[in-house]
Length: 165
Image (cartoon, rainbow, N blue to C red; front, top):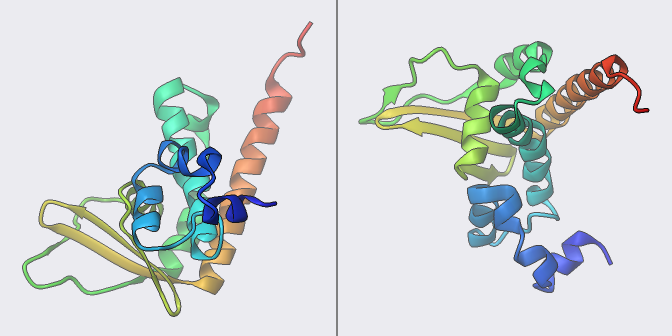
């Protein structure tokens, strides 16, 4: 039995821990009727793991993730995000945020939506608004860039640690 099957069967191991692990994003997926561990939910889970968790670990544990270099992934995300025009009554998000920061904020606050072509992410603060669409193809490539950055970072961090006695 896999995690998706346990989730669909409302197994407490999964259902009681989705909120703890995925925060508002997990709750949002559940409310929308999406599985966290199957379909689009899996895709969102991957990005949560690559973007939100390293940020939270760096912020709360002072871990090596503070030095994680996501510059290649950021450049790719900026180039490939289809940023949509602002809505009436909204102001353009003027802060110098990168595309990955907007993506991470959208994941952290459960402001992600599936569409026919991929995922829509929204980042809001007051009347400031950012909305972008990422196609499935782009999301796959972006996930690969993030994976490579994290893998390289972990490899370097582990090779610099002294061996345990």
